[in-house]
Image 1 (tube, one colour):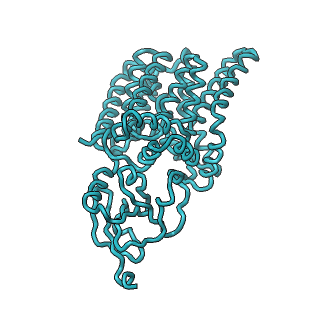
Image 2: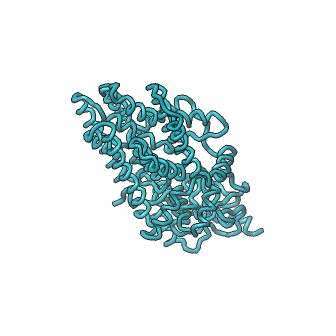
Image 3: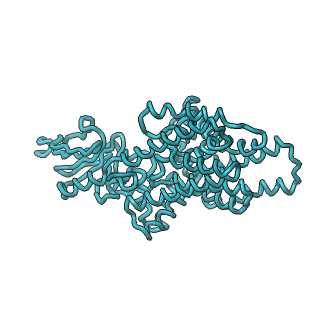
Length: 441
């Protein structure tokens, strides 16, 4: 049975898996030239040494961090509100369709989510060094952690301002010093961050978002899971009813404010930054904003809210079960296995159409460079790991096998004719022959 644990890796996952199998310092050097910090790759590198690099191994690592996140959500909600709120918040977080969609991803999302939530746990429990180390770990997981850490600082300063608390100079300095210490721990990665930012600003693929994109993102954090739209569209009204019936009280306003800022300020900051030349606005990078939304729904609810919370949990669980048992990822393992069995000696290339599948073919043991007749490829995630033999600009073979997810009608290679087509779902293998007049020449 195919599940999200054992289905094939997709492009970015395969990139991570191939990279984490390299020599340690080679891996770090490549990461520095890519677009992300190194912590996830370091963790995966060590995990592979112990448990191997199978799909199950990769997804199990992600899922363990996901379970850890849910435990932390329980502890935070219990600390801020009640044990009952903690249990419900943990269940809502676990089954949240937006998070569950990425719970089995072999990417840095699992470390980003875990360490951001861990940093909030230490912050709310006033464990200074725990907060400093977990916040630094979040920064070494993904650049978007900066938005969460700024939100934490902003919330603390805002609460001081609202309550008009009299703080001594030494107390304020200690607060600022805490964040400076996080910055000091991040100093070794500042230059790679600068270089990565330059790459993103000059050639990355994210566009400038509109205001409606910001609102859509916040809505999607509650409801989006890649399931039927008519079902998912009913989730947001249900969630808003639960919030509307919630007991909003001055007694817990600081806890509520922390959660609201945690949920809303990072997407707003990403939106504002993306109005400049640095476009960074992307939903999956903000998945750490889901837990506070779930905690708010689970806390201080009235008895009348219980049926709505129950329905929300059932819908979440149903979508999660469907996602788990109906993997959306392309069947690369089966597809590459068929090619190995039927065309083991054919010269293979990856067609550079809407996308390429270099990393999937590498992970599953096929040599299939990207065919780029137009010249050097532009920068994108993964370019840093490419070697000279991973891209070719001319074809010298009489017969080639083309790997693509473009429809065969959209695949056009000059001087070659399609002779045979095999497809496995959205994946195509095209056997192509050089035209006769070219052969004679």
